[in-house]
Length: 264
Ligand code: DGL
Image 1 (cartoon, rainbow, N blue to C red):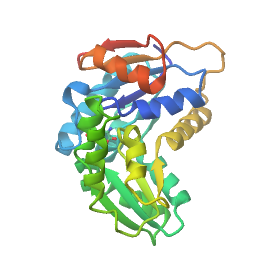
Image 2: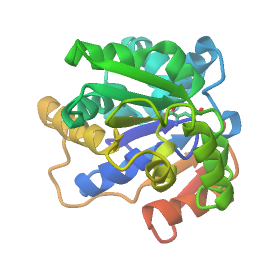
Image 3: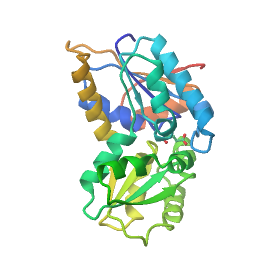
């Protein structure tokens, strides 16, 4: 597993980022950890999220990764800077790429941010967006019910649609033309989110933009895999590998994925 790209999240959400990385960089090897046992991170105190993020980064560091992607907005918001100080390999998060994508997409500068309680409380997106577009208006919305729906595999259900509709009701009449999916679990609910927001609102996921940043980071640091051979991705979960496997198969369309349990 030496020389792989490490990807971490509280659960299956980071798979939305892993999917884009695997598509964009097919010769790279990927190791993923989803801390499903302790998911969701969103409602947890920042100190706890930091501690768990460092545990996952340490586990991947011991496996010899060459770079790390914190594919979790909540962890990026509260732990990115601290984790960067602890390891010598390049580390990127998902908030800067997401903010950049939203700024490129908006015409009015009015941007909704959907995220976990932790991400919304941190105002991390507000800071990033305002850095790039000082006149922007941010409409933040915490969506604490979304992650449990995705983690329980109910992301294609009438129930999911109802919860999305009820949650988005709080902002549906407000004036904005872009909505950031500020949690990596949310792309699995994207079709419902699009349905329950006005048609003109562009839905922004940071996954594609993050994959671009990964490519750039490999290039700048001269650590891309130049050979054509790559190892099969390995997915670790602190929870049950069986449940995790189902979502990997469905979302990444990988037949017989290598899913293993890990204790942190
Ligand atoms: N997928 C994560 C995020 O992007 C975390 C969700 C959670 O564990 O609450 O914020």
